[in-house]
Amino acid sequence: MELFDKLSQGEALIESAILVQINFGSNNRSQHSSGASSTQDEHEFKELVRSAGAITSTLITGSRASPDSRYFVGTGKADEIKTAVKQHDADVVIFDHSLSPAQERNLERLFECRVLDRTALILDIFAQRAQSHEGKLQVELAQLKHMSTRLVRGWTHLERQKGGIGMRGPGETQLETDRRLLSIRIKQINKRLDKVNKQREQGRQLRQKTEIPTVSLVGYTNAGKSTLFNKITGSGVYAADQLFATLDPTLRRVNLPDQQSIVLADTVGFIRDLPHDLVAAFRATLQETIEADLILHVIDSSDENRDFFREQVNNVIQELGAEDVQQVEVMNKIDLTEQEPHVEEGHNGLPARVWLSSLTGEGLEALSETIAAIFAKNTFRGKLRLHPALARLRAQLYEDEAVVSESISDKGEYLLDVVIQQRRFDTMLGKEELTLEQVQ
Ligand SMILES: Nc1nc2c(ncn2[C@@H]2O[C@H](COP(=O)(O)OP(=O)(O)OP(=O)(O)O)[C@@H](O)[C@H]2O)c(=O)[nH]1
Ligand SMILES: [Mg+2]
Image (cartoon, rainbow, N blue to C red; front, side, top):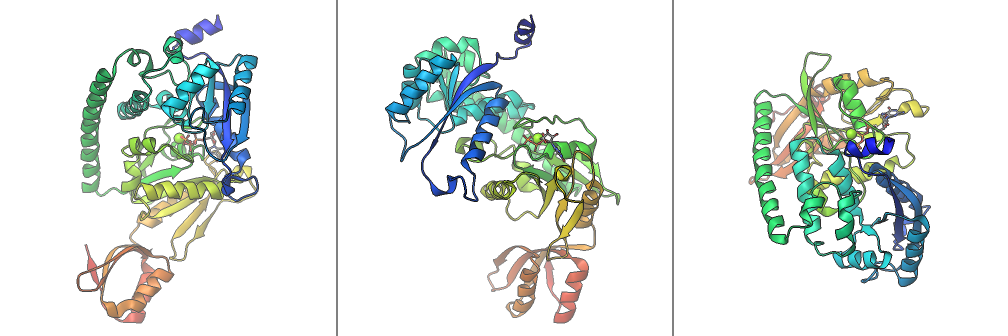
């Protein structure tokens, strides 16, 4: 009866999955390196599968020099997986890697069961989580693109009606249609996305006109961004112990202690090795990140791999062209550690790191004050045009880590984007006894 209720609510059956993870012998994946350990990879892979709503029957690991063109794994390993499928009566085999359409097809024929790769798995999670119109369109587009190379399949054709991982979203009806219909649908979605982008652009321009600074919560999946967002805004944005609980950036206007307003944006969590197609598909969703005045980089401080995650997120920020945006690290979940809530200052006299707990709320006030301080008048932020003779001042600004970006004018002047405490800046200028030209 319970099962029937579940089905009638449109929820998929819980599936049993065989997981496959192959180590290709790269050094930075070894157990004791500072990078992602294999145990960590394993944990994350299982979490992803759990988020997709499947149960891990068993995880099969192995190592190879390079992928086999036919089965991705060697024939011996392929037989091992096949046996496991039979033994566990598995519904699906999920690879923590990208598979070519041909490999996927060969494996499905061999196992007589559905085979998914990492991209399809992540897409499936996205499909379940997408909330907004744009998010749904983005996911459908990415799914259709992924699917268009995999239209001709033997086994899945029959299985598709049943639903399950990788089968949600546009799957059921689209597989029966041909490539032509698929491309029509892709065009349609692109058109709608264009429209959504225009609307987004209008909203952004409006915010710029009113000069409300935008603050983005960015971070690895499960770091606690949505929990923090909810705590700050008092709104009920979905937060759950699942990867990708949030897909769409959610914007809220927030009043700071000193009467200033900011727009706070919650964003989708980053993840290691996000398939490249997806980075492109979600660029629009993460646009807010790029255009923010301040990035709050949320980090699960209780996680032993926090440094690795931090690096991963900073890589993605760079990929999105947002590395010049000022960043404050939010060291979250201190309730799970020995840390007391506190603010760490950077060299430029501005806060660099706030230790807090989004769950208990300790340290939250300090964060609000920190954000307020950054946008308050006592912070100098702007572009400077420095004559080449002012190289010493320039060096000092660099020493203080106050320079966000730099270019050189035709006349050889330094054009600097600077963020620094006003008082500290005044002291520096005092020493130079020179006037500067402030651009802007
Ligand atoms: N103990 C503790 N748990 C926290 C804290 N903040 C968040 N969590 C938990 O961490 C889990 C993930 O939180 P979310 O806010 O959904 O994380 P997220 O960064 O938005 O994740 P994605 O949307 O998947 O990117 C939830 O179970 C939260 O309850 C905290 O300060 N302390
Ligand atoms: Mg979230």
